[in-house]
Image 1 (tube, helix red, strand yellow):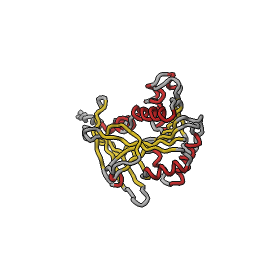
Image 2 (cartoon, helix red, strand yellow; image 1 turned 60 degrees about the vertical axis):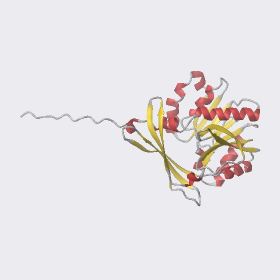
Image 3 (cartoon, rainbow, N blue to C red; image 1 turned 90 degrees about the horizontal axis):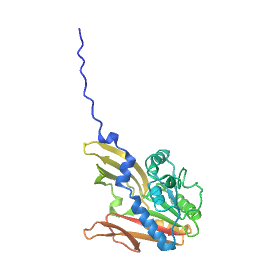
Image 4 (cartoon, rainbow, N blue to C red; image 1 turned 60 degrees about the horizontal axis):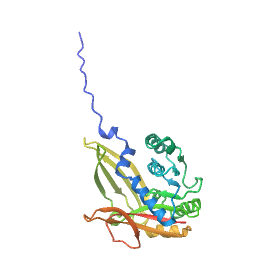
Length: 279
């Protein structure tokens, strides 16, 4: 007797299962162009010269390193990260977009920022709150001291911070992203904040138009450092001057992306600031 074989339908893959978490991160979180605009303009204003060598600590996909070398033929970038997977992604997806000459001026190193040795950079950058993985004051102070020693005599350390009364809450925020034909929802979740030690766990999730989700695409176990703590530590580590740069607001009440030196600010629900620490 002839058997009747039924051909099952092939289930379509969800958008979440085929999405690239690093690409989604760069589209929703990081703006390397704006970051380098700020570093460039601030360094020139403070030092009356152009910076040549940038060291990006906790560099991840090295998006900032690539943007740096695009800005000048004499520029060099050194990216440091402990994670080989993210460094390899950066080589495969970001460095390939550079010219051969530009690629030759980017060096990516898998190493601990506490141990790395290199030519003395004009700029050290630690952005996206990456240094918040250091929970202990003594450890963060040791890192800041190493940065100070590593810089050129007139070098500058750039970092960022965030805060506001919402930063102490367990909250979830969503933002729709439409970028170059790609649509998804970026979801930021803060959970488990401890007001005594300021330790917190944060997640980035991504949701897609087909209803699928990429949960816990990124996990962060951070200490929420305050601006006064950071300023005090940087000065203790030998930096001569620390400046806080606060973002302004446009006529619609939205952040305008223009960061200016500030000595006081309003108690907003959420804010992001830059800091520069001059050697």
